[in-house]
Image 1 (spheres, rainbow, N blue to C red):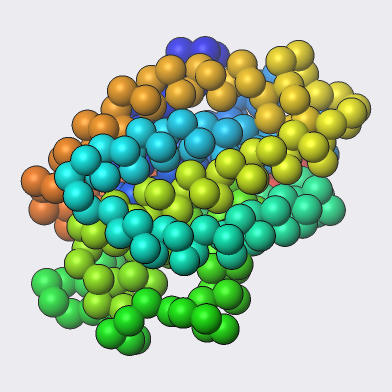
Image 2: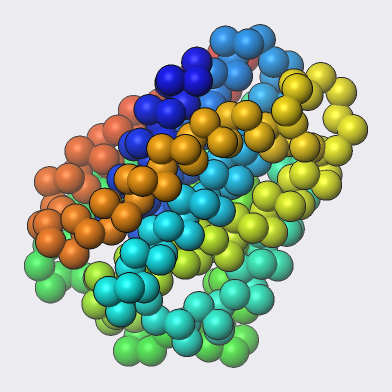
Length: 268
């Protein structure tokens, strides 16, 4: 099972660097399969998968953001403006995770992944994009958008890169800058999300050895042992590849993953 997690780490690092996401779309489904193999209680299984995924994003997202930053692609002003609200959202999302049961979390994850899958399967072509504004959201507009993004991402165990890129490109930011900056968003969401999951899950009955709250350190370390190496590779490829076909393949994977998690939620 450790080798399966390491393989997931390899894939998560690559997609994190390529698309500016945290790799949660790869990590969470893998953790669901692994945790089910060990017959963990359904009441904690999905919560552990989400929390452990966020813990891996702290490292994977940082490596991805670092690689993009070295290329001068990260907009630090956007990072500073969004950070407080992303943090608040991540904490609120974690609290909601604690309240919801495993089946509800699986349903929410499957719907979110399905929508993100559609985004990748049907990417905008060339210069055809929805332009909402010439500027990034600020002030009273920024607060609800960033808070929702942080909460939604923490609830799914992802870095929020895909919706962040959608917002930034709608505000006419170059795609490479959007991907690079979104990688930074993942770290900002994952750090408070991980800490919050450690706190709210502390003392929960049935947690396996090596866990702090809902975060399983053994699984997280197995994944990041590989993702730290592949995230910079993905970031380099993002600046040199035309990723339209790659996005479509990844989108198909997301839709298939969504169907699998939806089935698990309904079938119990």
